[in-house]
Amino acid sequence: RHLDKYRRGARNLETVSRHYGLFPENLHDARVDAELTASLARAMSEKYPEMRDSSFTDLHEKQIAWHTEWAESYGKFMRSKGRNSNVAKRTWPI
Image (cartoon, rainbow, N blue to C red; front, side, top):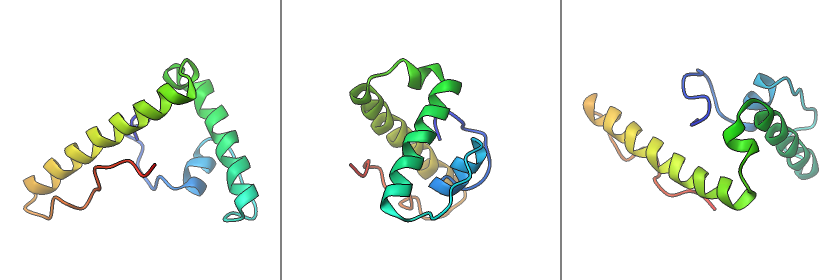
């Protein structure tokens, strides 16, 4: 989300992969998903220097911060619409 804020649509593995020109077969097979994730990271790092120039540890720390920032912003948006603002979990899953 952080690197491509204004792109509409889902952010799941299949949709994002297709956006970057990767067309996987046999999704949800552990090996296929792992290989696709690595290919997607490579494709994204070619487009975004912020990814390319980060170590895995630094990138993980950035993901945590980016997610927290997004969750807070989304909660604020939901409150402005009078809706439940606890929809987005603020914690990063790993």
